Length: 297
Image (cartoon, rainbow, N blue to C red; front, side):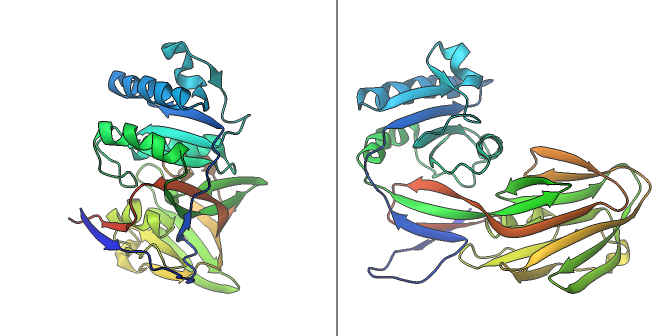
């Protein structure tokens, strides 16, 4: 992948609402290790991360999903907050963690241990583990990513990448989509639609023919999936907009899929509301550069 490096400017006061960078604050007191429980290599890294954090005087725990395997102190991240979560895995691991955290926003330190790791820094395990001491001592930057807030039948969900409304099986779904007070798609028939954030625009959205949005832009992408006759194209709308999707007609079941992790059944008359004002994600970066990845290189 191509990474475009942007060096932070001293005194830069520009607002990067979706993807902004701030300076760290020292004083981390508690941390949790979250890793894929089915990868022995990831669990070995988790043990080492636990050893490093504990040795630095940080109250350290394992997530309950791996604490039994590693025989260490456990916490449930759905019920208890910490200052830092060390995430060991790839994009899927991160997205599953974010659903556990909900609106809680601890610092996230990502250690790559997987094939698909778009948001993870491409550094070796030894370097990543050595970086933990820098994090504890407050010598890092923070990248802030905004999330979609989704509302459906009184429920609220958060999406870092996208929300997809998809027909199942061989039948299509007809959707009406409204941005603010304006109807932008009416009777749009096809396999569904993807609503994505800028950072998520390089994922499923891009695979479906949607645009890649620079992460500094305050915008949302709406991308129809296989609309009949290619009659509907993608649309980029302001990040301040509220998007409402109505399921006008469907024969087969339809699903709302959030970041590929959460699934909710939909039916005729279902209304989903999306806006780019969900609790942000704070990812620790040890590099002084902002790196922008593109999916085609």
